[in-house]
Every structure is written in structure tokens, then in C-alpha cells.
Image (cartoon, rainbow, N blue to C red):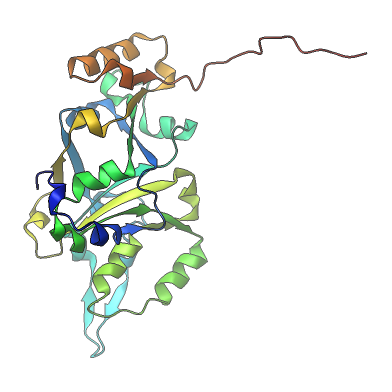
Length: 264
């Protein structure tokens, strides 16, 4: 993909593609099994097609039936072939995130997750590399809706040929309320259904790992285990500064330093 060259970016246009009130300077996080993290620490941000997302309500607008004013039916499913996306979260650490993304019972240490910390701005800068991105590249908070709210959002759409692409993009920043605990931040890159990227299953962007990553946090369930030491040692061998590597203390119990007083 394009090299990092932010001098070719119209900042005002770029900011129009920041959606749902996202603060670009806020920290964001991603929980990644270690076997997949290696690509990132080697300097590549790896982004899959949105068609690979598992929730049946993902890509919900693309699954709708469309009809032109002359009654011609349109199938929008194939339009996802040129759309890529990645999910992050504004939640710094939760028990659920570790249990969803990290399998500490696996015999493969690569299945244990590490949480990456960066900022929304650093992520957006990595994928929004020149003014051509104005038509394709977005970042924003996910908007969570109840089932009836989601249905009403679809029913109230006023679709035109010129605005259809933006409607599809907006729909990719909506999820059901049942997933609201994720507090998700997404990046979406929509190349269109005729782009060369439709023929591949992922895209990559170069990153400067030293500046992109603010912290790497190892699963708290690995505290005091050799797996945590192995992951940390491997990170150090890959050039990660030791000050950026930490083992989570989420499950460390800290008793009160003073006894509680029982009064007569």
C-alpha cells in the first residue's frame, strides 16, 4: 500500500472522515493472539475484508434488497469485496476481552493474546496516506443500536446513487446493543467493487513500530508463568523497548495495608 507521507494530506478533508465523535488523540487498544501480533511488530498493519466478520448482522445493509425506480433489482452483496476493516476498542482492559481473544490453555503460546495500545490518530495516520483516501478511508466510534433502532435507521434511509457509498460506510459503524461492552473503534477502507483490491483477501500498511505502539500488555493469567517470560523475551528480540512491555496485574489481589476496625 501507499508509503507514509502525511505531507500530501488535506487535513480538513481527512477530519470529515472521522465519525461518531471519535477523539483522535484518545488511546485505543487491540487484543491480538501473539501468533498474529508478529506481523505488526515487524512493521505491517494487516487488515482483512469486512466480509470475513462473523456476526450475522455485520454488513447488514449489504444484505438488504434494493430496487431502482424502474423496478430493477440490485444485489449489493458483491460490493463488500472491495471493503476492508479492522476493529479496536476504547476499553483499556476487561476480563471479557482477555477471555475472548486469549487462549491460555492452548499448548501453542501463539494463542495467548497481547493487548496493543496506540492512539486513534496514529492508526488513522497509518491508513490515511494521501488525498485519494478522502473517498475511501474512515475511522470512528461504533454506534450501538437496539434492534428496533437499527430497523428504523434502515427504513429512514434516503438512498441516491451519489450517496449510496456513504450509506454503506455509515452502516459499517453500527452494531447491535448486545455488543456495546466492546466500545469499538473501527477503521473502514472502501475501494469499491471494481478495484484491484477486490481480488485479494487482505491489505497491509507500513507502520513505524517504535512510534505506533505505546504499550504491549501481556495476558494477566500468564503472570508468574514462563509463557509471559517467553513472550517478553521474544518482543525484546524483535526490537521492542522494554519500557513498553508490561504484564497485566488485573488478577493480582492487593489486600488493605491496615486492618479494618470493628467498633463496639
